[in-house]
Length: 401
Image (cartoon, rainbow, N blue to C red; front, side, top):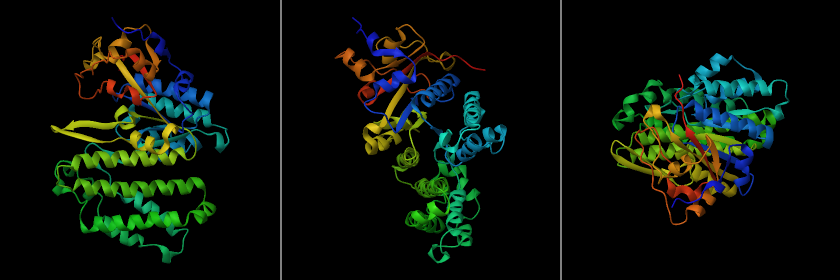
């Protein structure tokens, strides 16, 4: 006999999610089990609008390049640039081409128009400047940090000149060579120049920290925050390139771990200025270890969500998204003995699920883990019920043109 789980579900709205949480979080993480579906991005947009209007949220972060995201933030806060430029240049991973992301940016710009700075919505990229095929050159991040410091502190305190950085960086194509992702010997990450750059970047970040009282007064908190972002990105990218040159069996695990560490550090910095809604893959936001297989090799690492949750406790909340069907991807009606199958049998197109209530209702009738027919979709793992604050269930994902 199937367990009665109707009482664990509620209509989808921000207020229903907030009622599930033990405390008002600094970071509210909404995960998704697959990328590239406009229906999930539309749901995210609706959720963020409700959080803004009902809960006073001001910042959204998405799984996109943190440096590129600066231009999106400038556009939504001050109208700098044009919408087309921002959509083309302000997103990584092809996210700028999605209609729902364009709608989000337009809505944020319209909302901010005429409002004082303290009430404006902010946009942020969560991810490092990383793609599946490789990593960016650290040039933009390390030189921007150096420029910020060189204009505001005693030159004698700087660990190097801009010319030294330029010499050590060399040409950007040395860093962005896509062959390095599959062949460590093609990576520049353990060259003598890269090792010296790591030391100098660390010294620049230390100088930024040491001069904090002066720098915030001489510029602004926003400018100082941006300099910190450059510092985090420079050191993170150089660490990533270092492990790209690794030849040990732990190489891919190290790369996945460094990426999530960069995400976690960005999230913690954003949380300092107020509540944040972050939207990314469930695997980046869950409290448990993340895992995947790459080239037949199983990988496990601590996700950004796990790292942030260990620091913030109840100030971090994670709401996973689970799906019924994505028929155009070959994901059909879920088996009835899975979490997705149990929820699919209920009326309604989408709902908010009390994860702990669902676990109690199921008792010893633990559902099985749904098998994915498609690499790009990760079904909800019932073993993670206890570490979710809630689940958003979407019954059917339609094909979009």
